[in-house]
Length: 319
Image (cartoon, rainbow, N blue to C red):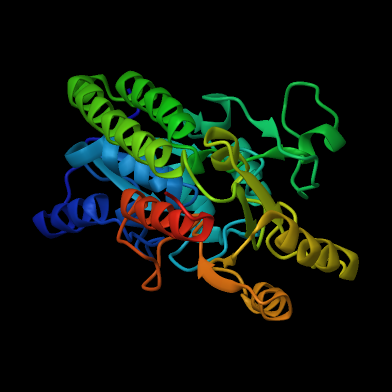
């Protein structure tokens, strides 16, 4: 087993426990908090992976994240300290292709337990919009891999599939606490199933099925609940839409009864608000949950997803 059992001070233990339980854990500036503790040291690549690790690891895991709160994760570049942090950990939980710099660092690290969330469910192509991420292992061409949508955590059903895989990996890597990991995984899956039911009930009867978003993060959610996502940008939140795309969306808003243009907390809302103003539409937040900040409508994944549901119900005219 790769879990380290080294003596550390009571203060350090308390600090590590606090890091492991808080939802807003940032990349620690103290490398001792990231590895070499008496707990199961897990490095998560960004918030959705962090949430899984914290929920499943519970009191036995010391969880740190490479992506700080408020930081846009897609273009993350790692510092030397963060790269070292990976090497000191017992396990790393990430989503391959979302953060190329993380993929490269993990490939070069000596971490024994590498958990790729993308391998625990099926990544799909939602419209073939290019996402400038590196090709995945397995023989697909770079062009094919670009079209794979990584935003699996926005579908509670897929996220639950990933949670089960993460739980199994934790049990194998830290067998001394396997029973607790199994129990914690079951509890999380139950919460995600209840969230899925809430979305099914809330979105089954709506005035329109079309919603506009800043970037194409909600393909899995739309597919799960019978909706149509129309994104201003593609899968890359920083890409700029063409004038033709803006005109197309303005026309579609009229045709499909769209009332709202959604924007998000970690990316500029300028384009979304300009489109809304020109088309006479409202604006609201639909959070892709790539990070939690003070501006988030909730303190964790479940709370923000519930806020997303309410925003969709209002915008789509839920009956």
